[in-house]
Figure 1 (tube, helix red, strand yellow):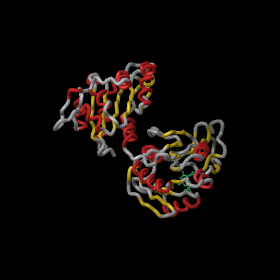
Figure 2 (spheres, protein in one colour):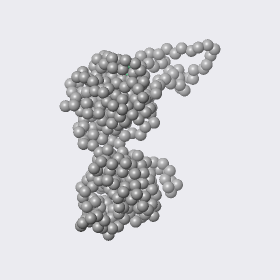
Figure 3 (spheres, protein in one colour):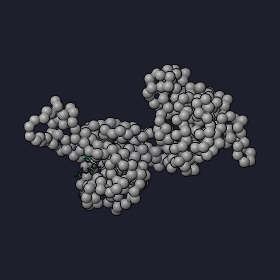
Figure 4 (cartoon, helix red, strand yellow):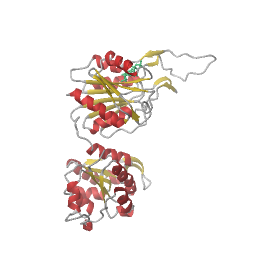
Length: 399
Ligand code: CTP
């Protein structure tokens, strides 16, 4: 996904520097030409060697490390000039301060000055340091100059304090890189509404009815749409997934909550992708107290929930695109085509629970995209790749 991209990883002196080997390794595996620049203090936490091995490139620690390559090349200029993206992580208060004020007294801060590519900064420090107005002002200066500041994570810090200031997990940093530089922003200016995950229908305060949806497919659609520049609102049922970078998330529990959120957000959307596995039935009434067991069997009356997709289909405006999903165990195409018509959708992405590599929980899918113009059968793909192909069809419809 990052083939042909030159990425500079700037590592400064925080304890989280050791996590950056995972980031370097992931970027290399994604095809990036990754060059690590370390400060002297970073070397107190990790040596350059693992980075050199993982990226297969020289690691720069000093401005006078110059002339690594053949011919006349000055890395402290050429690295920044030729980079597609710079990620500085962890970024200490010291490095942030220097960058904000144009001080270039080491290789890392020097490389940044000639760069014209996107620059991502992941601050990592103690909460009290982070909250200090001088650090906040320096971050604001960088923001104003177009740097993207990655939100620090919260939790137990190395010094023993609890709070904000942790370096986000390596996979979050990699996703930030992908978000910033992977894609052509061909969905810029479009507003996407995506639903994902199951719903939970309460029977009483301790029990609920739900299904096996993991939310992965919908999260992939939201992630890829955001990477392609769309403004994305994701309405998510109860799932254990991290919010994709650049996506606004609304958490809901029941089918009724999901209907309320989707119908509200839909008014200003250009496109909706209903990948949520919305419950079709909910208990007629949720008991206030725990239902106690008695002799004999128990029946719980259920009532129909709102069919959200069908409601959207009824109030669709000119130019809006509606994409539904269809999960079947038999007669995949005929049942899914019936949904396309009945719900007045523009597209239905049909997937079968019976096909290996497709369906709930797994990271892959096999989807057939049904439209009134015809069907497109996608092969076995990752859910991110599947999402990308679905978005290609949506993009054509949005024209
Ligand atoms: N859907 C919805 N509201 C519901 C149920 C489903 O918006 N109450 C949407 C789903 O998000 C999906 C599409 O409708 O995009 C098809 O969902 P699916 O569960 O495959 O089919 P159903 O319409 O529920 O029909 P059936 O359960 O009979 O297959």
